[in-house]
Amino acid sequence: MTLGDAAAIRRAIAAREVSAVDVCRASLDRIEALNGALNAFITVDAERALRRAASLDDGPATVRDLPLFGVPIAVKDNICTRGLRTTAGSRILEHYTPPYSATVIERVEAAGAIVVGKTNCDEFAMGSSTEHSAFGPARNPWAHDRTPGGSSGGSAIAVATGMTPIALGSETGGSVRQPAALCGVLGFKPTYGRISRYGLIAFGSSMDQIGPLATNVTDLATVLQVLAGEDLRDSSCARRPADDYSAMLNAGARGLRIGIPSRILAEGIEEGVRAAFDAATEALRDAGASLIDIELPHARYATPAYAIVAMAEASSNLGRYDGVRYGHRGEKTSSLRDMYTSTRAAFGREVKRRVLLGTYVLSGGYYDAFYTKAQQVRALLRRDYETAFEQVDVVATPTSPTTAFPLGARVEDPLQMYLADVLTVSANLTGLPAISVPCGFAEGLPVGLQLTGRAWDEATLLRGAAAITNR
Ligand code: GLN
Image (cartoon, rainbow, N blue to C red; front, side, top):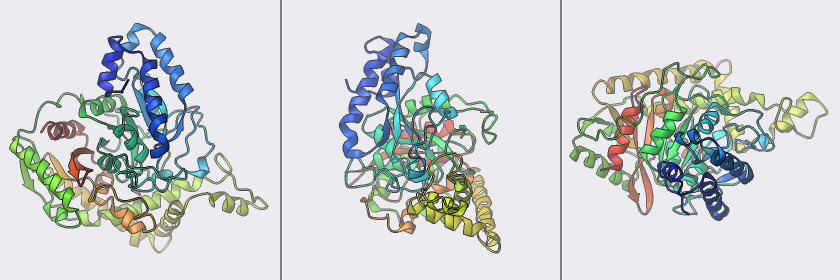
């Protein structure tokens, strides 16, 4: 069988046309057939997945009403899964099997989903191409010599190729939206605090969020519904009940006020990306939305501010990999210092670069010049969006300035790699929700359109995304 989307799977199982085991097998077969070429998964545990599918099939009839009953899901390898290896794409955690599951895992499992495996990602989610994975680069399903994007590249591939209908990724600066765009699927970054971070391996804690990927808006809304809401184990998770995310999916584009920051879009966007973006926004206008020119005066400082904040927080968060409590320990242990040094030598180059730069921007004498400045930019950027949202309901840009770039093209040039995120990092710095929706192709490669919304207004983003899909 070929897997349909999550809603179709659930319907087919409910009608007893197929069993959860059949669906799980189909997902595992597809992974088996494609993973050699694409390297989307670091770990697949077929036995564990099939066991769980069988127990769902044997369970009481009432569980069949669960929103994700029998739906296979792929999970980025920086989200802890009890009893299932979780590496964060790093040699440091190569042999780490968490004794607990992230809250999001508990929630999708309680909703009936089946975790089939853990997806490839840049080491500790630091990257935009999945080439900084210690387990080898992942490949774009549309062109195997190109990147799937990153850092949640494996999750985007899994969904784009139908290995699993849905996946979880994580975002610090665009790591769900950008690979979703480059692989031609939907990716969602919720408002900071909407989804629990408990069990997400920390990178930049003031920006990190878990987000779902799917092939359509309905599935995305279903997963968001399952994930959203308070969690007492994460004090940064809001005590705000989830909204009804499916309620506005059919509201259409009529009356939607879409802000276009034309000054930002004037430079650095590939022609084909720009053309696909313009065609999609014009179609929305034809369907009754209004396109309003807006200014985000401080957005041009977002990339440097993001780099400073992300690296500062990373240098602090990664201090815990000291070879003592868990994870890899270096061989050379004649002194404590040697032990730290040889342990931390296992980090890849990009992680080391960020720990060093992050420590630098936080050090005495430089803190105010870099870290404090970056936080000030963050406040100004927030104000830019508040001003824009007095006039518009959502802000539209392409998700990525380019389509999928060739493997190897940027990996030696960190600045070029960071520029892949120019259009995505603002949502992370401000905490606002944002979504990437497929909006067309440029030279055979997918293009994503990004909508950014008001804090907590995920429902309007989903409405806008549905309007784009149905245009
Ligand atoms: N590509 C960005 C970075 O390298 C964002 C990564 C992410 O969102 N996890 O930091």
